[in-house]
Image 1 (tube, protein in one colour):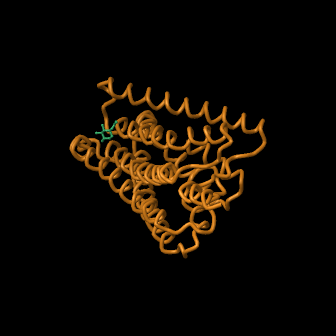
Image 2 (cartoon, helix red, strand yellow; image 1 turned 60 degrees about the horizontal axis):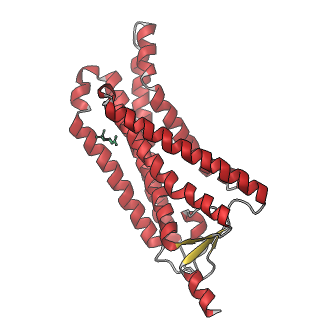
Image 3 (spheres, rainbow, N blue to C red; image 1 turned 90 degrees about the vertical axis):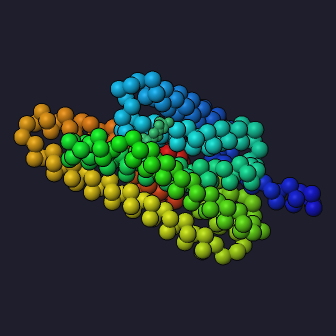
Amino acid sequence: MENSNQTSSNRFILLGLTNIPYLQAIYVSVFFVIYITTLSANSLFIIVVRINERLQTPMYLLLSNLSILDICLSSTISPRIMINTLSQDRSVSVLDCALQMFFNLAVGGTECLILAVMAYDRYAAICQPLHYNTVMNKTFCICVATGSWTLSFISAFLHVFFTFQLPYCRSHTVNHFFCEMPPFFRLSCRDTWPNELAVYITATIIAMCSFCLTLISYIHIISTILNFRSSEGRKKSFSTCTSHLTVVSLFYGTILLYMIPHSETSKQLQLFIRL
Ligand SMILES: *[C@@H]1O[C@H](CO)[C@@H](O)[C@H](O)[C@H]1NC(C)=O
């Protein structure tokens, strides 16, 4: 009895996706395909941008930053889900769990900030074309990119650190298929409101600032484009925004899904879109 308590004290049990064997097989294959696609598509993109001089623009460099983030996130989540489902062993170590939580938060925050920087880049390119090279110069780009990474990674570290300071005396069974903060808070026997408030405030600040910057940039971009004389010029300028707009809509679409009350399907849908 004592022994089993001790082993469970440094591991958590993830309830996983399903207990039905044939569904497990389907899930594992789907995760495998998604994971391999994510890895190869993103690596390919990073390599293409690296070796192609013409793609060394802020836009593509920032997109390859997003690719690295994608790889980090998938690699901390997908393999673990596949291993746990295949081995029927639902437990994860505290470190694994903390890493999943950390990357989930850190990657989300960094993506959000980098998308805002990319919106600013499109604003500079379309609304200030003559000053574009001075506004989006190399030092500025490196500073904002490094800033986004540092800010999100430090804040994620603090949140995860304080989450694992909580006493988990109630249960070690997480009703989810990877380690995420909200289901975790429900396991603690201490009041978790200070942690929840801190996460909520940080997420709101990061998401709101990025969303506003993105929105303001696009309001300027659209009003500038509408003032162009030729429809050819309009189309051409707008087409430089499409890759960014696609990523932005996917990202904020996922955030919206998060706000939908937690049903099983929405949780699974969120994860698939996220990966
Ligand atoms: C990330 O973005 C910064 C700023 O544009 C760039 O200097 C850096 O090379 C990018 N990293 C990668 C791996 O593309």
